[in-house]
Length: 284
Ligand SMILES: [Zn+2]
Image (cartoon, protein in one colour):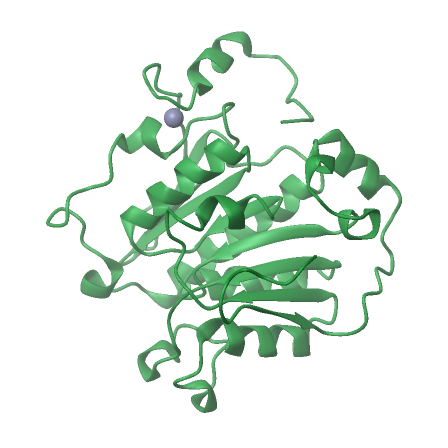
């Protein structure tokens, strides 16, 4: 990979690039999914590349869960924020000494120390309309760890355009939800919400607060979806939204989401072809 066009971004290698235990089927799997159109050499193609957008309440538990998968994997971290004292109780990867440091840098240091299989790429800036397509297209799977609706919709639209699967999530108070979107095949965010909420409607996490263990559960679930997808298995949350409410019984519910016929993602047309009983497709 050439020099990054983005300021302040960097790579953290935990060790020289050794893809131990990388079975030959992985390259075949990647080829089957059409990833060979990416401008990479064959060695790089053999490992998964996962993009984590936001390294906060959701991103931290998701990144730790990816590390625990103990696979050679490139994880891209993008987040413009610095570590603050208020982050420490919930975002457990950060230490007091990290306060004032970019979150991506502090998280990268901790991750490569604990999980030698990971290679971390850091991007200490915001995902914006100007850079989103370039960044998203560099990864095989995207995890939405953001806390603002505008970025969630930007991520949705960018992943759809680039054909990259992603797992959306949101947490608020004692509840959370997650859904995986396979572009053009399963319902997207606009199938559910159509438009981002207005400024007044959106009650952000900063205002409403979130409960740490709820974010931990949802973030770990997002990592599980990434690993399941990249392993070639059908993901549990493709076309289904999982809701988690720590105060309700039952705590979790899984709701099927039909693609909206008028949505520009085009998943509705595909769903008509996919009659019940058909096998899950192995390729996008
Ligand atoms: Zn849609």
